[in-house]
Image 1 (cartoon, rainbow, N blue to C red):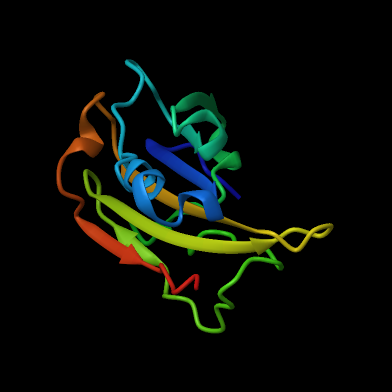
Image 2 (image 1 turned 180 degrees about the horizontal axis):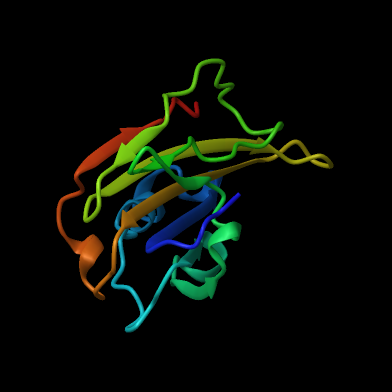
Length: 160
């Protein structure tokens, strides 16, 4: 489904528990960045950054193939079409209606944010996650996502 193209996806995933819902731990979580410089020379790929409460929100990075992005990007009518990010069956809040796909011209980039709450299967404890997708159509320099995105989609909902 993915055609060869100059597209870069940066997926920033922040995960936490009730411990980081308030006070100093929440301040640390809220200070976690949602954009990072790209590795030098990165082509069409996914730059994954994971920050977990258990690691004091220290970023861990890796590079993967574009097909592992968690979002579908493809060329349609001379533009890059970005479909809404994948969502699991068990994450809350329920999203009955999703935003439409976003189309980007060459050189444009999109930031798509979506959050989730999950219930543990054994003890019923809640955990939370914020996924931020920074998506560019074109060649990417290391600082491409450090500016203002061309488009934004915010699917964050109330997590209670």
